[in-house]
Length: 438
Image 1 (cartoon, rainbow, N blue to C red):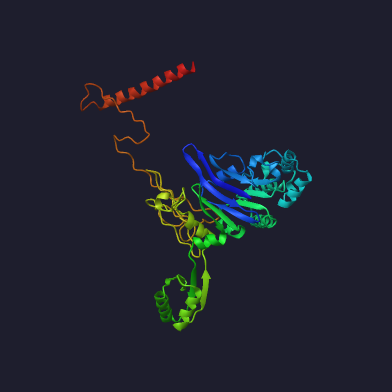
Image 2: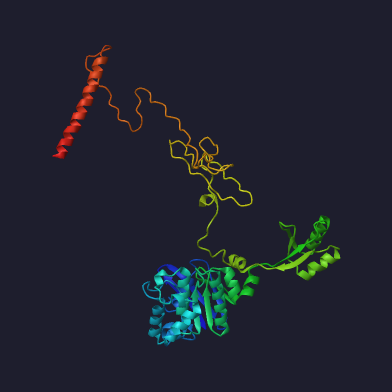
């Protein structure tokens, strides 16, 4: 059994865990839930003696972890599946752990068989996938055949078959009377695996109860009823009767009614008294995920949004066409990037248009040309020639030097002076090049 009493951990002026008290009992899978940054990993590290608590205490079978004789035979843990030397074989990694704890070598082959890594036992762990690394970490936790097991995100990276295997493994370990403490963010998996829940938020205890009690305490059950579609007047009659009896009735998108505040037998009696036929009368309860979200909504430190400012729903840039609707499927938000300032529009940066191909600059679809490929690119009109005296960007213009004394008849003098300036500039450049060469 794991028991925490007044557990507190501070890092400077930040309190990661505050006055946390709970028990993890043997014979059950206890889920450890909480938002990111709530203190789950810190709590697990204090349980395993990796961090010293600022206040309070935590014991395993009545002893702090560091005082357990041969702790690996009492406690197995998976906190970080990457805590393996990448150049070491999987079997050698487990063999080293076994030798450090006085565990027989035959146990290494046993746990490799349990986690399904016999075929890669002599391969280096740096080539393992994320799921294979998780299996190796679970094998290390099971190596000493301990009575207390802690797992932090054990199904991370596993495929559906691996997730099912971990679920059955946790239940089997608990059925043997072991203490199983599992931290996870997968609510659907916790609903299928855990018997009991410890929920924390911002380092404080929020709930310590069974999964069933947790869902009932943090969600409102409801009844779903359906009447014949051809009798809408009877549905309105039943709605009025249920409301008068103290129920709250809401219509659903498929025509059914959601009723809260009344038990099923009472709803059935009211329908009978009002002479309304029911095609459906079924109880419904919120999922663990819904109950968890309701419980922790005020304890979330990192909350995401989906408004336009968050970048997930960007407005259309100027000149971009709206995304086309594709029949039979949702259309992702594809928007053409805005063209560079001063550049002609890119015909290939347009969204798909009806008829195939991509929109051209004129908005017409471009179709494959005979013999393969696409038709020629749209002709971009040539830029207007610059007016006399104007300077185009990136062009060096040498203005003619007007000779002194030249008047209205001084045009030849201006041309000669301009030519002399060009020759002088060229000669100066040549002189510098010669000096650089020397």
